[in-house]
Amino acid sequence: MRYYLLAALSASFLVLQGCSPTLNWRDVRTDQTPLTALFPCKPDQVVRTVSLGAKDVAMTMLGCDAGDATFSLAHADMRDAANPGVALDQWKRTTLGNMRAGSASELPFPIKGASVSPQSVRVEVRGVRPDGTAVAMHAVWFASGTQVFQAAVHADSVSPAVAESFFTGLRLQ
Image (cartoon, rainbow, N blue to C red; front, side, top):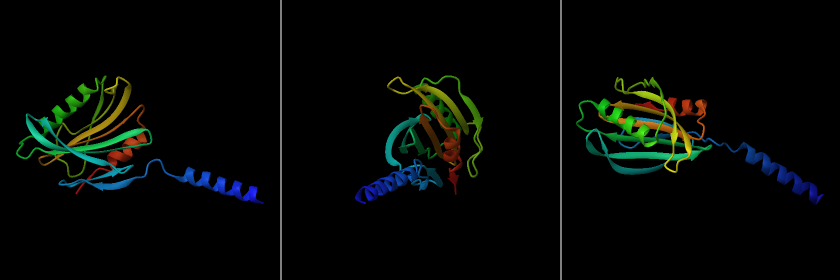
């Protein structure tokens, strides 16, 4: 009897572990912006000063790892920038250059409430991590007023469905 009880408890534990979701989607509101994002994990946050659009700005970055992928969202307020598109273009070129990206698939990225700009794009690309290993990235860049944003998914192989969920979960209020 004791053996059967132990076996039943072990089986129940294994079933409950199987029900644990790899991607636990949740809404995350970004500080000081009108953006809400849908993350598959609880992101950590860090603020760094970076050079963007020929000026130093405070960039807030949120990120977490889930399902063998890294999910990130970064934003900065360009303050008095007349054209945030220049900053978006520089940001995209720097990101792709840093990962020594191959040819990129690029499409417009319209998001309700965002500034209309040819620099609002979605990119799918393969490159290398800082340690030299291969990585795939799906990323979007867009602006809302003077605020610029980048959201990205990095993995050995990015699931198009997971990237789509992440990007469609970006909402400007």
